[in-house]
Length: 125
Image 1 (spheres, rainbow, N blue to C red):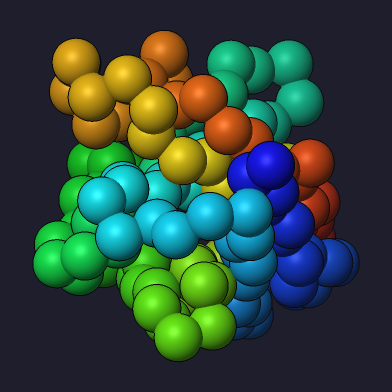
Image 2 (cartoon, rainbow, N blue to C red):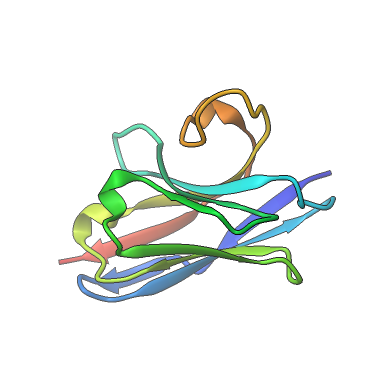
C-alpha cells in the first residue's frame, strides 16, 4: 500500500524559506514521477513541480520562476520542495503525489493517483 506523508509546513514570514518533505513508502518508485501540488483557500489545486524518480529530471510550473527547487533522495524514498523568498500568495496546503496514468501532461492533476494528506504553509506579510 503506497503511503505519502508530507511534513515541514508551518507559519513563516514573507521572505523566509521553507523545505517540505514527502516520505514515500509501500513499494519501489523507480519508474515514477512524483510531484508537488498546492491548494490555496478558495482556489483549485494546482501543479507546482515534479521530478522523475529514476532520472532526476525536473518539471516546474511557470509561476515558480526559480524560487522553488524540487529534489529527491532515492535512498530515503523522500522528495523535497525547497521554497525561497516566500510570499503571502504562497499560502496553501501543499500535497505530494505520484503519477499513475502516464497518459497526459505531467502537470495534469488527473495523472496522479496517490496523494498525501497535505501540509499547511502560511506566509504572513
